[in-house]
Length: 335
Image (cartoon, rainbow, N blue to C red):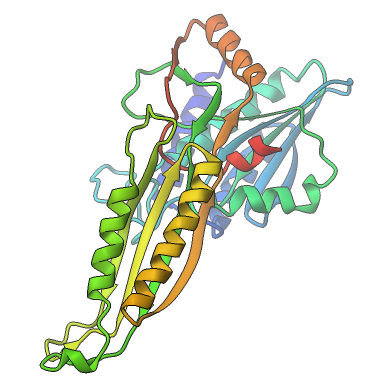
């Protein structure tokens, strides 16, 4: 177990990270904080990975499985409005998904592994950057450090507000959904607002796209055909009352349990966008961003968690259907 001194250290680190959050791919000070603790309090082999990440390796010296345990370290580009003492000091950036907590948890595990080494095989602790923008897992897997690593198991956790302390939530197969976002640009022609017929205004096309998104949405998590299109950003024209807009931009985030359904419905969405723009004499620009693959939990890995929960006398909850948020750890579960 962690002693009181280490618990105080970890609490202090978590609050320091919360007060000094860094967005995806810019976690340089966070990386320094992680390396400082690992160097001082553990016997881990320490490597930088994916530019701003850290890999801590614990070897038993005996043949056995290689197990990866991952925690993410980045924050979000969102202002914090809390009033507690360790609130974010970085304008427009804050830890809203608890990655400061994930980092502290993994540092605590590193301390424990230093006191009680693995009896066989190797344990890799990955402090992964850039989860929030979907680039972190991709960067780690492409890093030369990982090219010759054969993983037998890969585990990750996520804090879950609303559940009890010490409650472990598990599910075999899909645990989180496929998520991707689309950026739709509608290029028309500006004109005087008194003569909109001389221009090409994207407003009606935008209205039709919003309506279509609502029609194809099935926001029923218990249904295998769950498919959710959420409008997240809309921009059209300028704040100039004498001008009829000639440009519009619409962003959707799309979620689905099924990879196949995601592909089919996204293809249909692209086709509808193109047809709608053509009907309104608009030129369409379509691009995709922040793609997250579904986390597919292997039954054997889930059983290890069940066994550990029972051994530690933790409450275990088997969720009936996946969580709707995205998580880039899905790239690890695919491999």
